[in-house]
Amino acid sequence: MQFRTPLSFAIIIVTLASAAPACTQEVVTLHAQTTVSTSGRHFEFATDGPTGPGWSRPDAIARTYIAEDLPALFRRTLRIDSDLPQQTRLSWIFTGPHAGVTVELTNSTVRLLQRSYDSVALSGSGSYPEKITHDDERTYIGHARTLTVIVDAHLSVQVLLNGEPILSQPFVFDLTRQQLMFSGPRKQHLTLSGTLLDERPQDASIHVFPAKIHQAMIGFGGSPSIPAYAHLSENGKRLYWELLRRYNLLIDREYPMGTELKPDLSNADNLNDATPHYYGDNFPNGEVSSFDYMRRTRELGGQVLYEMWALPSWATEAYTPQGKPVLDAWGKPVKTAAKPEVYAHIVTDFCRLAKQHTGAAPEIIGIENEVEQAPEIYAAMTIAVRKALDEAGFSYTKIQMADAPYAWMALGRIADEKRFPKAWSATDFTASHQYDVQQFLANPDLYDDRLKALREAGDGKPFLATEICLNDSHFQEASYRLALQVGQLYQKDLVDADAEMLLYCWLLLDVEQPTFGASRSLLVPDRANGDIPVPSSFQLRILGAYSRHVLKGMHRIEANPANTDLLTAAFTDGTRNTIIMLNRSTSAQRLALDWPDAKLFSMERTSFYSANTETQTPKEIIVAPGEIMTLSNFRAE
Image 1 (cartoon, rainbow, N blue to C red):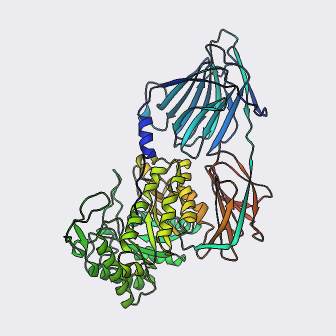
Image 2 (cartoon, rainbow, N blue to C red):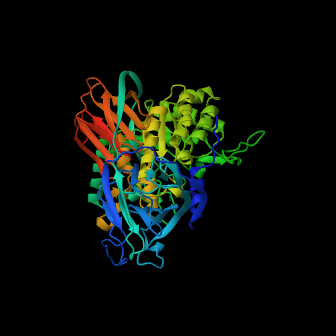
Image 3 (cartoon, one colour):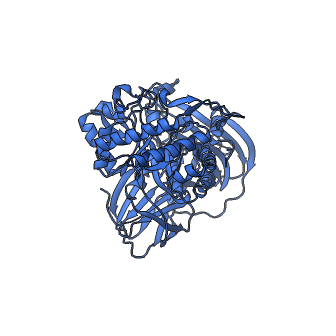
């Protein structure tokens, strides 16, 4: 089964981003605003009022600065007491670490513009770097009495007048603070007043059903760049393992050497023979194993998943199918094939070396990573590996199907493997990377059917989400809001696909260009502070909201929230209990939790402002917009 994808959100972004000049849309006639709340912060402006001078605006009217740390997702509304006077403008200015949004309102137009200002590469004619990246304007007729700005989980920013949608733009950055500015002729007495309305929490209930049991968890982790790890200082290595322990990232997905591997595997962990892995102008991150790294993983109670990518030339041969050529997912002929028996010997020899150096063979063998083989070759590889492992005494090592980069492609591979019953019988886990989720990143719910199809296609075999990150250039921003979309994928993997394992792409990556670290890796080396590992972005804390309190052996149990925007997953092993709630709405959620006898005394908050901060659970539980809250009856620190 294969799914074809619609126009991707990335294409929509490209289309809108290409129009930087103001774009005027058709005139809209406003309807009278329905009754709104009156409570909030009052503001008043006068064109001849007090000035707020500064280096770049010596005669500007004093601004109103709002003392609020904005949540990651929000809806904010201004109630305006009267029409704006002619020749005046109200500017609602939202700012964040890398970019800002400004909404400008006059008595006949509303304008929405985005500004990037985090690099001197954006320098223009002004006194500070800034570039307008999106700019739209719309004319209206009527009386503007409320102005609303919404930054939501659909990676957009919207402007409403009198409750009616007027303007919308794609938006991936974080906004943290806001201010109001009024401008007009200084020699006249023109005024404007209004109120920034308060936002109130919604009531939300969740019912947990411990008797409805789903998958048992194996764990969380990813792939280390061994060269990047080797360049850490001794203190950096110590901190690295502390971070893996703190975040419970104890599945080591080995990215072993491929093309340079010798037939006797004598250089399997030789750093000098690492196969280069290139990202832009970054220094190469090699694909090579490290038995010392695997040993340290095991000392923390972790496991190893071994999966080769490119095979050495001595393990492949030309593929000449009988009859019609075999085409890969992109319609190109497959011209190379693995030698199944040779590949099986590589696997078993590596298992012997791993047992010798680390005390155990890998718990799981992945057949091959993101390489197109003919279906009969993959089937022969699976059968040969199972036979070789059993004969070598590694019957406890399980087999994961060959990884595909996209879920829709994984569905095709499952269907192909089922044509070979012995190979399907020898396969213990279905698996997939999930880069096609980026086509739905503005609305991840559209990805649900693919994940459910993966679960159903497995015929009861457990599913592993083996490589997760963002590699589309439009989403390579170190923003919390993008990381939160990946958090939705974790939730959906756990609930829709019954995933037993979640693996990020890289645990550690050595980068020069920071966008590669922010999108592809949880950690990067900080060379300016002693070669220690530091989070590359918000991706680590988002994964930590799930990994820190979901331990090996815990089962997912049924949890039904009344609000579909409060994504929920609950876990227990009979003694330890955890429930995770991701609030993707623009309203805070006041929680009523029905989980008898759970006694969830530990609360962990994950947000733009909180990196997995653990405190005692209060009597009233409120989940902020864009926040992930984890409740447990044990502490992870």
